[in-house]
Length: 252
Length: 252
DNA sequence: ACGCCTGTTGCACACAATGCAACGACTAGT
DNA sequence: ACTAGTCGTTGCATTGTGTGCAACAGGCGT
Image (tube, rainbow over all chains, first blue to last red; front, side, top):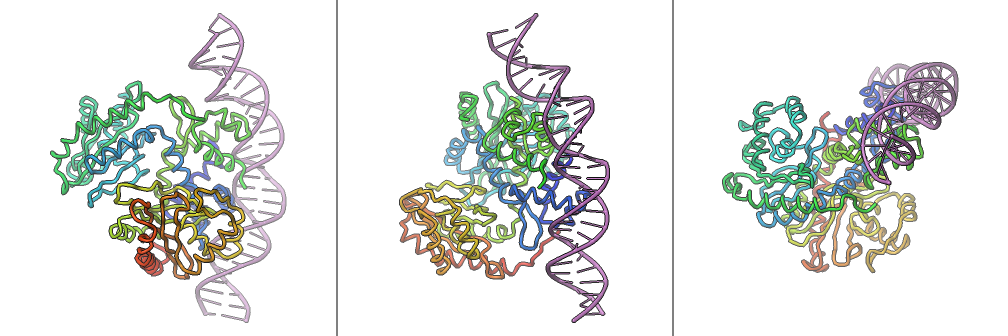
């Protein structure tokens, strides 16, 4: 809608791929160097880009601070956190919390496994949307047309032989998840990693977040992990209750 | 430098404090509602703001993703990480990695303590700049005029009775740190928490990052923590060497 | 049904962002 | 050492683009 801002913001994902110098930025934006310079300067003043010693630009510090403040303002996250920690202390495995937003599913909290073998993931990282247990839970709750639209639009990378291969299989899986009220990912993303997840619901019953417990085969088998399901569901329900009871608006 | 972009970017920190509706945004920017609307729309298209059900705006998902990609592109962090993990496995305490950028010191990596009592911190969060060991290390290496300028400009909150109270004391402490090549924070931020830190240097000898080990009194006394100093310094030096040896530009 | 509040759209005007060209700093090549 | 080339930076005229206004639409409460 606003050309100038649009151009300026396009610089961010560009720099996310790695540092770039003025010429590169100007070229990839399709604008004159002087224009790119001014945009970069403005971004710089706001701390969103940083100029390193070799004069190239990269993303700046304030971006972290912003993302940080943003994530801390999410009510679900704040309420859920202590419960996730408690769950982790009981079972010892990695616990994740995720939300759906604008066609993306992303982790907003994580409690690390206490076992030496950890799975790689990080808060803020987009989730493997077609296979992760939390993604299934979040998408399964969307209104039917939107769910279908997204399913059609997605790519279905075969991370492993057990990844869901296409929109049909995915939608079918979502139907199952929706029906049973919990979800799994048994080696669909990483051959040796399994997850069990449950949804967190708001006062109106809509799914607002999803949580899961993940563990590699070498620590517990899929069957053993599934025995944790009642515990996971109970934790999710506890969080749901607490979340629903919250006064809608908090502080200023 | 660019008015439009400037205004648009000013919205981000504003929303970081919490969700706001169109009117509030327009008012706090000092522009017409229609202007604010267009700016917000542009931000929205880029995923930087999200419109929640009650129509209010808050920071969006892509912000996380950007911050995430950004932090993963930092060479120091990538190189240091495995060493930090190794150090954590040896001593069991929380290990931090921080950098200085544009008047701010911020954590860019962290390995959690294996002890049940953990200190609160989060990567992306600005560091308590006047007391943290890593902050002292990073500021101590700045050229004298800049160091002095920053010291004068800072606030000196008395987190505890052992916090550094003013610019004079701070600069004196920095001189000591600079001289000895390591730093501590003994209860200057949280009464019961101590840290020992060491600098990581680039090929030219300049400090590019700083690392520290933190532990609460209830786990180890300050004296015991100080016995880890040689280990911390050795780790920092190892990282420095590896970092200096890196080819300046990596991949595309 | 009415008024009030908030978000949204179309439009004319003015200003602010743009591209150009010239300059300065720095590197590399001969 | 001089030149040719590259890259970042600045001042300026031109116009395109962002702006505020005023009118409209939709929701909510009374």
